Length: 510
Image 1 (cartoon, rainbow, N blue to C red):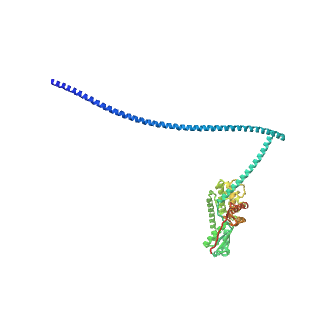
Image 2 (cartoon, rainbow, N blue to C red):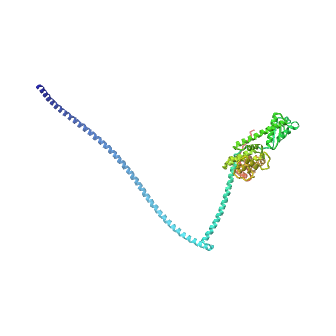
Image 3 (tube, rainbow, N blue to C red):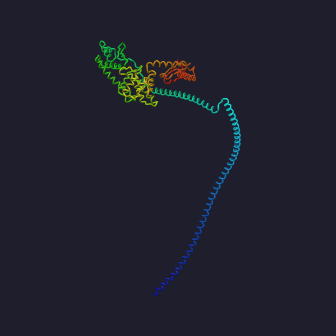
């Protein structure tokens, strides 16, 4: 037990020494670490100081740059202000100079005003003296003179106003006339229809003259039966391979022609057969008349026409007026009426309807003593046409008074269609004479060698001698001829005058 106690004591003593030794060693090691740390801290401190100095130098450099930049801006601003100050000084000097000039001008104006005021006073004094002298001479007070002057001015104003109104009305009439002519000319130029001059005979061609004997028949019975059934005079003469059908009624002539054609083609010609064929042909013509009237109304865009009026329109194909085919004339008038009504802003369809029906009184189924315009108007009223159409039909030859604007349009278009060169027989001679007059008028000028009226008299081509007439003279001749035509001749539309001057070099090689 004691031994164990002694061992423990020895262990504790040894451990204390060992602990003391360990503690001294740790102190030495700690002092070494502290010294190394102090050295490292000193080194870090030096590095930081160097870095701070470098940073300071950089900041200082940047600060100096900023300061220099601000100083430059301040210097520029100072220079600008200095320039502005110099300019302001110059402006002040200029303003002072102008102010002095204005003061001088003001003084001059004041002097002028004073002079004008003195002259105005003198003029007023002279005016008062003259007024007093006029009062003494005229024996009138100023109020009486004013009253007389007002009366005189009123009378003068009335006279001038009346003259102005008159001139305005004349100008309006002239303008209206010119506009009307323009509408008519445009309508004429926009319509071009074929025209055929009708006559009172038809020619029936045959293959040989032997057929003539068969048509005449024994003792002339066939030809008498044919004439009796058709009402057409059949002339069989020495004309080779032709038979003449003479009648003023084109429908009868057409029935006779078609009946003859059927009889000759069939070969059986005797009185009973003639009457049968003529009856069938007459029925065929009646159907064709209705078809023609229907096609005409469809072509013109006219709808709702009574069947009897349609049939009347078809019969116009076989009627003529002064040698002019009545259906072609009515179609042309309808087209003209539609165009002219459209130009004037009116009902074009109604105008076309009136234009187509204006001459239906010329194809009566029975003889009548009434004028064709009145008869046509009565038919139109009977078959339910509008009052405007009826009035236009009845008034197109001034038998009754016109009550709407469609009526004068129909009258004008009817005159245009009938008066156009070549439309009617009696116009043909005057048309040819007008062409001759145009050529003779051109030939009357010096240097003109030839003159030709072409394009139905719408253009006059004049040939001149190139040795006698130069280019300037050619232009003058063209102008002179145009003026002479305007002043001396009457013509529809316009006439173009073309003067031709050419030089030709001709040689013959032998």
